Length: 166
Image 1: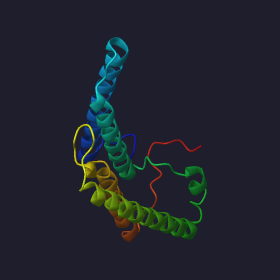
Image 2 (image 1 turned 135 degrees about the vertical axis):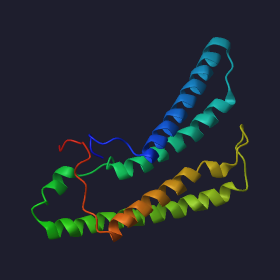
Image 3 (image 1 turned 45 degrees about the vertical axis):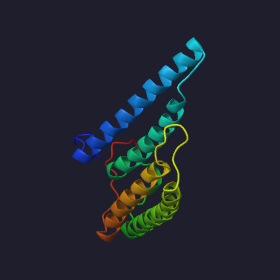
């Protein structure tokens, strides 16, 4: 994502969702700490809720970071290949194919965990356990589809994501 462009609607929604997750986690943990140290008792649900929201926040962020080009990149290595377009194209295809393969493997494992979670609920809050691995499944599906689209459309690597080359 270029530093001059504004975030897309989906990125803005992702940022809001991540902020809500972080805000709820911060409030829950703060009150739990105050209750534990101040009054000798805490809220058991705070830990479970924080864990659930943290997992969702991480995978929402990972999904939003992919189209913005904000995932880890070896820009100093890849930027040196700009003078070799054939090598650059082959490396781009390899990277995107590996991303799609990783998403397939991650999604398969996440689906297995979602399937197992249908049979049980969390101990304290009682939410269905499939909610914990669900963001992994959704994120791998979204990133895999974005990478597959880039692969099939033969899109070049985007170096204009506002990160300095190190």
